[in-house]
Length: 271
Image (cartoon, rainbow, N blue to C red; front, side, top):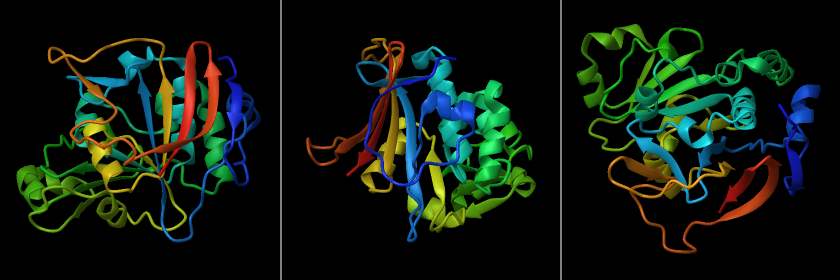
């Protein structure tokens, strides 16, 4: 795995204690630790023209990234520093028996990820926070197996649709009749409070709603050197889906840029 070439980095704060091989791969990684609320960052890989997934399978980025080794390593790094990972139910259905831990996405760096979590004083794995308003979730999936701590955040209607399944896992129920579960509600239910680092790995529709709430602080975006295009069959999904932001209504400031071959690894602060 070739180290990423640093183009520029304007992030601030103390760098995290990356083990030598992770530092050699990525360089310094700084994350904001807020005293008043969690620091929330999302991660996507997109084509040159902004496509992040096919539907079905909704939320899967492997076809876009080509399973690029550097992209997998960065995904693992972000999971390794996170206290919790927010997963949309659509992503869960698309990913099968995946668990959103660093070693699951990039097993070749598992030991270094574990050392990083230990140095940060974190548990062995981040909390897996699955969000489903409808309760359309298969609770036999690996994410609920105990490999990592997990929590299902759902509604009263979701609890009813789960039926007998609901007694097998830890669950938090939001207000009755809620049509959409806000990210603030999710984080409160998961007890991810001030000082926590939260990674959002939900699909584009859910992440767009979180962006509209003003709940996402940063975006890590890998640009893959492919063109996909928009179509209805198969349906392709862009990074922003379901809402339209007028130009200038939602903007980002480029914090850092790295290059790995023909792939760009960008980091934005969301205004």
